[in-house]
Length: 357
Length: 76
Image 1 (spheres, helix red, strand yellow):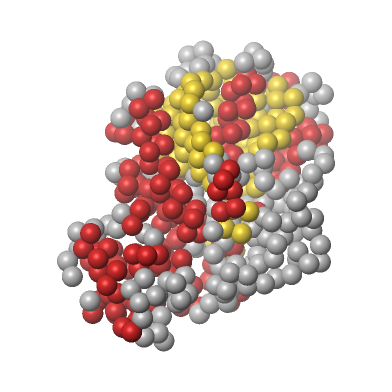
Image 2 (tube, rainbow over the protein chains, first blue to last red; image 1 turned 90 degrees about the horizontal axis):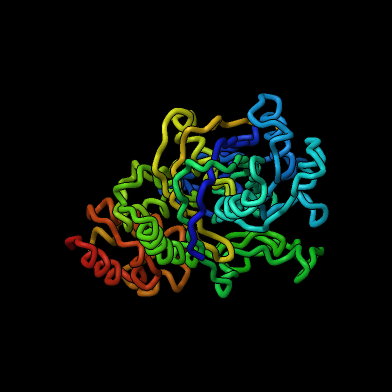
């Protein structure tokens, strides 16, 4: 889908990170590989440290902590909120929905629309798309978009290909109508025929969790132990998908918006790992300085929350008094890939909260 | 060629890469070793390897690696 959203603006972003920070060196012994071989990946992939929630923390806990912080600080008022959109692959439960949990825990009005969307790495684009469409019917109310994942609970700690890069986090984004805003050019693709490149085989209606699905095995004979309850990522397939699909996507989106690569001041992309982002920058001939790729080394890959965490970490308070011409892009499970051009800035707030969740 | 051999040995010192032409297929190097190898080759030969060339076939033997280096502007 290629479309233009008009008169919509992001007016605030809060990144929410769990307090618990784990260093890559401290986990090397978990993996079934020689330490030297594993440590070589530190520089290449950007493995340094990552944030992981406590065993008792759910996705909604990060969201509730963040929204309560925003309400306490008057960054948003309860009566301003028209809708809560939650995008996650790690809901607290199948029933009830995370958006309803947030609405109940934070004491929001019963008129507030609550909706959950299941999306992974492309969560931010999907969440914004829902917000832009809802705002057509919400006049002066605001939409609060929560992009949150606690994938550390679904990734095997014995899987060197996935666990070191996982980061738990939430992004909370306020979106509202603003007739003076520049057009947002939006472009989204899906290919369900390649859906198994990123999959959690068990736990849904296809295959319920059981003693059998919890068995840890080296299924691919590659030294990584995981069960059917865990996330499985086909690294080669995902790399090839990103490098094949994303460059033409960006070119097409920029052409659709009538802009050149040089017109964009910041390329704020999903953060899979440093290697993949460097290769994308090279292919697109975008200077590394315009495409931040430091999220994995600081927090891990926050999945659906990666773009808001990227924005807050790398631009933060600059977005209060400045405006930047930006290109956002996200790609991952589904397979899904999308991009949008948007002017970011003049925000009411753009900050990080370290939660004790 | 010796440089490529040395890089491979740095990743897997226990393996005889000179007599093997199926480095990836036989599971000697996994996809993460491949990424390490690409980075080391780029540094050693001062080149950028096109992302679309980073596929197992192009790194399955010393000769294949030499070809991908040449294709991306490196001198062997």
